[in-house]
Length: 305
Image (cartoon, rainbow, N blue to C red; front, top):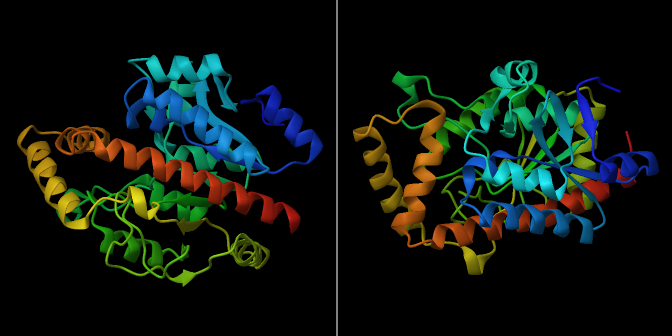
């Protein structure tokens, strides 16, 4: 067992019993939502996974350990801490070695999940190529991680604040398959359709698991993006979210917001500009992703490597 990993009692028991486990990131708790909705959502998402027959493992960095599964007290600590570091691949060793409190992004959660032997990871949306990346080179480390780390990532696509077309081109270049669930279109987080198609449509957990297992058995390392659209009743109109996104991007530019601060700033502004409706959409899509991810984990568990 890796010396940096600390399994919660629930996850340790699941590993011993051979039960399917689903990884969850923690930046959605520290940077993605306000308190107390962040902690309430984290607990609800974990419960959705349990009810679907899998075991949740929320991942964070605490006291020099990669915690695989968090207690209720640890969730509360993360949800109320003003100084939690947003941890990607670059930051992981620093935050561990300095014993800082760290919330894991998609990239860091994939790394930790792989170390812990977890095959499925549920998040809200993955990072991608930022608008203007041709000059800024602002491309999320999530995409490179998907190219190298063999974990299936269930998400509601990418946020409309990104350049979705270039994000999909980057994934294609690096051989990362993008799977659509329930529709051929690739979702765009707050809305169901980005205007771009996924590579393949696989609606059932069994077909998704068969595809993913075949990929890895062929020695084709790297992740799979499972694009699961937000439920219809919670989706926001594309025209509205596009208009608000443009306004938030312009405000970020004027205020000189850059780097890892861009996404939290934009999400906060979109929440304010939608009167809080975007937060309700965010919560709904994460819960839906948890359900799809848990079912995938159960299906993969039924067809072991």
